[in-house]
Image 1: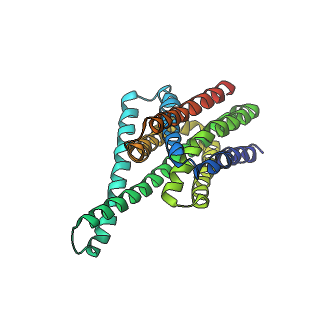
Image 2: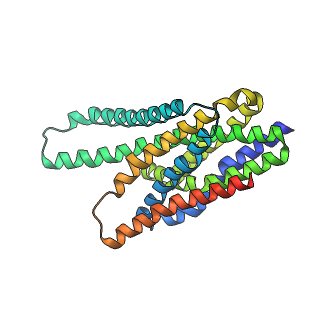
Image 3: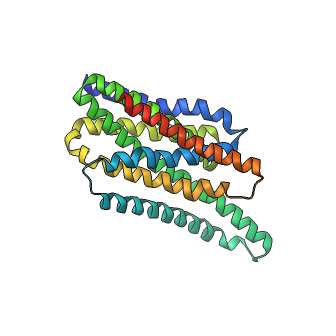
Length: 267
């Protein structure tokens, strides 16, 4: 009975948050792409710096180890992007018979798009690790007390919504369709149930590793925001567009910070 409750709660939290985020963000995306990119960047950075990392550093894990993992994660996703770009360039090198200006522009544009695909994979990897950690936390709360478990699941659902709004923007950029983006993020959300099952079976042993899950997820979100989203926003704009960009970036940060604060207050 307890295991069934854990699996139900983790699926509702993991997938429910994605669908709520989809309803809120997908309608806006078509008309306000640049605004949503700014919101996504702010949401991903705030999720890492205002939610995941503080939780990790509040544990007994050593700060030096956690920072090393954060750095290693960012470098890993950089190398993953590089490997995909190199493979893409190597695969199509023979198609170009000369290195004229047109080819250079085409290669730069195509490479940028391909890089965004790498960002999509980084988000999915981070989401999966984050979701697994959420599942373990929900299972731990259920093992302690059923009511606490329900509150923890609702808290996870609430604070994941603004973060998943950012994920869906990134994934639609790389996948090209809303349906594919929603499917991918939903599949990552199901990992919450896997975390719940694992947490139920190994709750005492896994608690020691939660800080490392949180930092590993943070590294992917920081990398995607700084290497993939913000460069797309770094172009010369008029004063009004620049202010709008900054506003939406700060809105993404504020949204995650406020919702995470409320969720933790309830917890």
